[in-house]
Image 1 (cartoon, helix red, strand yellow):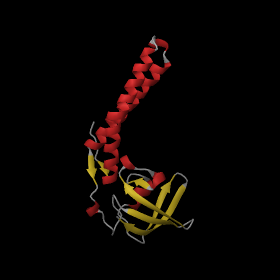
Image 2 (spheres, rainbow, N blue to C red):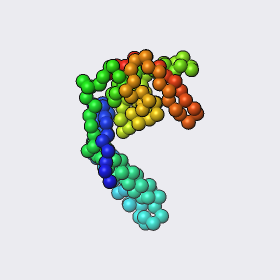
Image 3 (tube, rainbow, N blue to C red):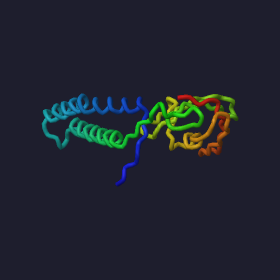
Image 4 (tube, one colour):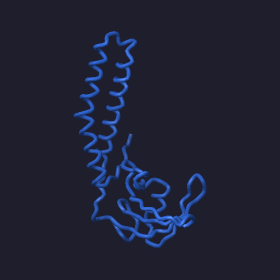
Length: 158
């Protein structure tokens, strides 16, 4: 399987490295201790604490593998290369919803650090894809499941 590049901001890279470190050093020990305690209850065939701890261990290891894969394929978005002329990865974009006359700010990030509730949208999302390459003042139409939304780009910053 060919792994694709994962674009990360410096902040996203540091957050993932911190999470990985915590998972490997703190969470692994906590889960191992839970398994040890559950084994002390005896018969594991009907030991729900043991089953739960083993499931948690599997999820933990899966997350560790996923983060390691992301970091292995990470391409850092260089702040100095973020254009303020056109929307690129790493750009902070203020857009105005032309229907509701509301302004929103988005940071365009790679899919690994997308967090729409905190204004970080993926370059692969419909809005992110529509904004890429556009300039201040441009009007973009984004096709969404409910129809389409028109945004005007108010400003582009780093």
